[in-house]
Amino acid sequence: MIKQEIKGLSFYQFEALRQHPVHQGIFSRLGGVSPDPWSSLNLGGLSGDSRENIVENRRRIFSCFDLPVETLFDVWQVHGNRIICTDRPRPLTAEHEKADAIFTNMPGITLFMRFADCVPLFFYDPKKNVVGIAHAGRIGTLNRIAEDCIVRMKVEYGSEPGDILAGIGPSIGPDHYEVKQDVLEQAEICFDDLREILVHENGKMFLNLWEANRLILAQSGVTKIEIAEICTACHTDEWFSHRAENGLTGRFGAILALKERETDDGEH
Ligand SMILES: [Zn+2]
Image (tube, rainbow, N blue to C red; front, side, top):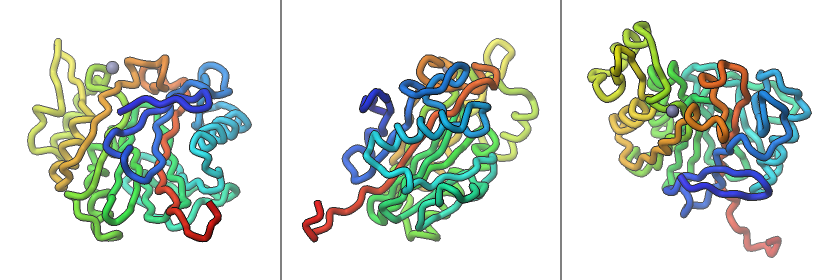
């Protein structure tokens, strides 16, 4: 990923998406208005931070790309496998639907999700002009939400997996993600070969969420996969980390949107 700074905010972009007509950014925790322990660009509505802070932080993120906040589409992320394909924004006064992956093929809709260790998965099909973001924590990863996303792109938009660009964003790395026996048992159900996914070291067991998602995407036919390899728990100066900060922290934001096509009515 490549780091960018605009209007006092810093965010990261997948290199493979930069040449395409999309707005994209995974925002660091810097440049917002929230106090500790949410300092400072917190987007997490259920984190304990005030709504005014979160609304201001969200405004700053959208203003980075000059996107109206009314273009927002977001959901209540619940560690499930439900995927929503939308053709309209969520009205700001409307309730959030529960889901963990969101897609659109319409410009003028800004997909928006929140993270603090869970894996942000970005999807873009340049042929069918489709974008999507998924929230893949341990549960979503082991339940193969990445595969569900590719299947849904095929069914809903006619995407070919070989055309899809996928990105695996900043999230807790294998060095910091120790897991217990119960996770091993879950992982055995989901993967034929655990050697690359579960790392044993000094009597401890670590889950590699990056490799797990990469493997699932590859098994689903995706060949273009970019991995940020940025561990949120290693860098709490720049990222919120649920595990490293013992659950008392904020959520950083990720946005992905198709750019509006240039019109020839002279409006531009
Ligand atoms: Zn780490």
